[in-house]
Length: 477
Ligand SMILES: Cc1cc2nc3c(=O)[nH]c(=O)nc-3n(C[C@H](O)[C@H](O)[C@H](O)COP(=O)(O)OP(=O)(O)OC[C@H]3O[C@@H](n4cnc5c(N)ncnc54)[C@H](O)[C@@H]3O)c2cc1C
Image (cartoon, rainbow, N blue to C red; front, side, top):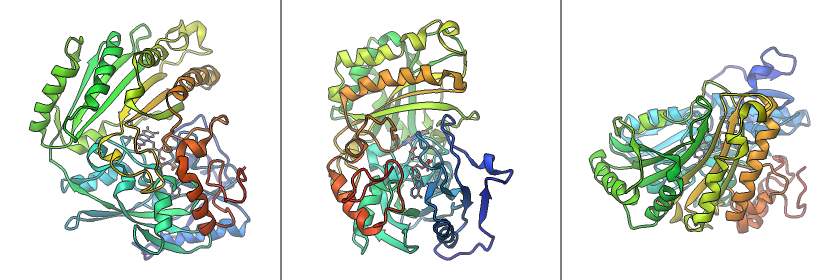
C-alpha cells in the first residue's frame, strides 16, 4: 500500500469549479465552510503532493476523512482542504488477524471486509464514519466492552509530517512518541495520518442484540437500574445503550425510551444473559419488547446505525461521566430536558418554523469494560475511568430554528458540565467557555505540546483546537 499504484492525476476542485459546492460534505450542515480549494489525493504520493501544493501557495491545510466532525473541524475556511475520501484501500490479513486500512475507509466497508471472516475489532456506530477521524479521537462501539477503543487496537500508523516525510510509527519504534500522541489527539495537529494497521479478533457469526422500548414514565427507574447493573460483576462482553428521543412524526406522543442490550459472543449465551438482565433490571417496568430477530450478524447491527438520506443541521454536547455520579436528582434533570418548553411546547407557536424532521435525544453509551483497563498514560486518550458517554443531540433541517435549538443545547450543556468536565474528543465542542485542553486531554496536555514541538515546530498543522507549542500557549487562532 506504500507504493503508488494509481497513476491518475490528483484532483483539485477550486472555487471557480462547478463541483466546488458539491465537494463540501459535512455531516452537520449547520456549519458551512469556504476552503481555498479541495484536493482529493488517491495515493500516499498524491497526499505528499497535496501538502506541497498547499505549502507552495502559503496556505495551511484542513484534513477530512469522513466529514462527521460535529463542529466541522475537517474543512476550514481559506485552507487547502485535503479530502481523503479516495484513500480507501483495505488489506486484510486473515492468518495474523490484522487489517491495514487507509484513513478514508468507511466503517461499513471496514466491517464488510472483516466480518466475512468472522473477524472484527472496536469501531463506531455510524456506517459512514471513516476510520481516520474515528480512530484518531478514540473510537467506541458495541465491541469496545470486549476490545477497548479503536486506539487500543492500533498496531502501526503512517503519518505525513509537515516537512513532507512519511513515517511509520508504532508502540516500540523510533516514532513511539508520535504513536502515543496520535492515539487520542491525532486530529489535533501532528500530521496527516494516512494509514493504520489494526488488531482484529474472532467474533461469533451470530451475536446477540435486542432493544427494549420502555414507557417514558420509567426513565428514572430504568436508568438507575441500568447504571447499577453496569457496575455489577456481569459478563464483560455485554454492551449497553440508553437512548431517549423525541421525534415529531406524532407531535403529541411522549419521547421514546430505548435500551439496547448487546452481547459479543454466541447468540444463545446472549439470550441467557439477556433474560437475567431483563428480570433484574426491568422488573416491574412497563415495557414493550420489540418483536424481531435478536440473533444477528455483527454486520447487520452496523447497518442499523444512523445512515441518513437527509443532511441535517445539529448541535451535539458530550461529557464522559462516572455512572455513579448520576444520582436520582441528576437523572430527573436529564429527563426534564426531554419535556422542556422547547421540546414539548406548542411547536407551531414556539418554534420559528415547524420542522417534523427534528429530533432531540439524550443518549448514554457504555464506555466501561476493556476501555477502562488501559492506563490513562498509555496514549493521549486520558479518559480511562469514566464508564459512560453522555450525549445530548438536537438534529433538524430548518435554519430558522438554529437559535432556539441552541438554547436547548445550552441548557443541556449547563447540566452536563455540573456532572463532568471530561469531553470525548470525538464529540468536540466549540463553546468558547470550555477549556478544551483540559476537557479532552487533562494532564496529558503538556506532553502533547512537547511532541508537537518535535514533529511540527512551525505549527503548520494548526486549527482552533490543535495542540499549541509549549512556548506559545493559545497561539493557534
Ligand atoms: C452520526 C454519528 C455517529 C457517531 N457514532 C460514534 C460512535 O458510535 N462512536 C464513536 O467513537 N464516535 C462516534 N461518532 C463521532 C465520530 O467518531 C467523530 O465525529 C469522528 O471524528 C468522525 O470521523 P470522520 O473521519 O468521519 O470525521 P472528519 O470530520 O473527517 O474528521 C474529524 C477530525 O479528525 C481530523 N482528521 C480526519 N482524518 C484525519 C487524518 N487522516 N489525519 C489527521 N487528521 C484527520 C479532521 O481534521 C477533524 O478534525 C459519531 C458521529 C456521528 C456524526
